[in-house]
Image (cartoon, rainbow, N blue to C red):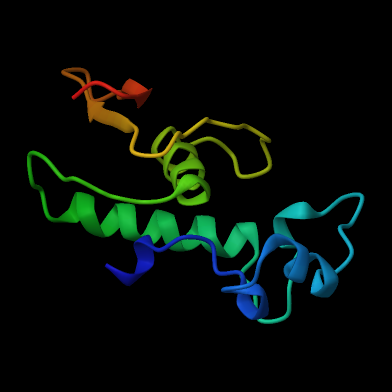
Length: 121
């Protein structure tokens, strides 16, 4: 699903960190949800809305199990969307390379994080 991609860095895509730093727009003191760090980049709000749309699409399929592969920023947005946390709430979840996070809905229809950033299948 194209909506499951990582945060779009716009003109900085494919650049090294030092190259991207030279074209980065100044970081605002507030309003980070709508900050566009590079020309043609996606804001955090846009990525989170896209993630929420993808999650709704997956849930509408009424499958018992879905496996989603993604990157760190996408994982942050997915967990925040899954837990229905307000976008303005600044939270952070750690995702190591090749880690596993397991989400589920329990018997009381509550959303749970069963495993976060686990390295055991």
